[in-house]
Amino acid sequence: MTPTRDKEALQTMIRKLGMAMFMEKEAVVTVWTDVEDQTIQGMITKLDKERKSIKIENEKEYTWVPFDHVLSIEIVQTEVQ
Image (tube, rainbow, N blue to C red; front, top):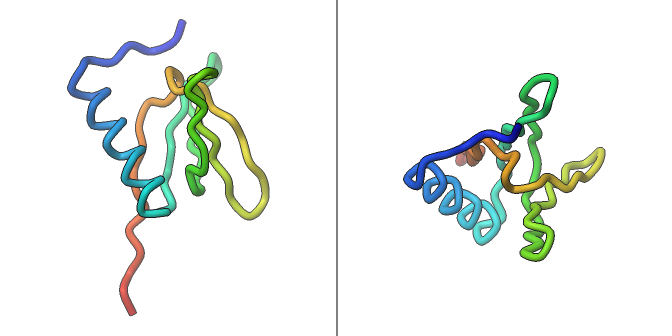
C-alpha cells in the first residue's frame, strides 16, 4: 500500500520538485518500496504528467519513480568556493 500524505506535505514536496528542476539542483529523493524506503541522489530531469512519474538521473544510471511513491525531496546544498 502506497503512503498517504497530508495536503501541506504534498505542497512542500511539489515546491521542492519544482525548485530542483528549475534551478537544475541535485536532490536526494526518498522513495517508498514494499521492502524498505530507498534514497536516490541525482538530478530530477523530467516530469511525466500522464504516468505521474519523475525521472532521476546521476552519473551511473537513471530511474523513473511514480510520484505517489516519493516520500521526500531534499535539495543538495553545494558549497560556494
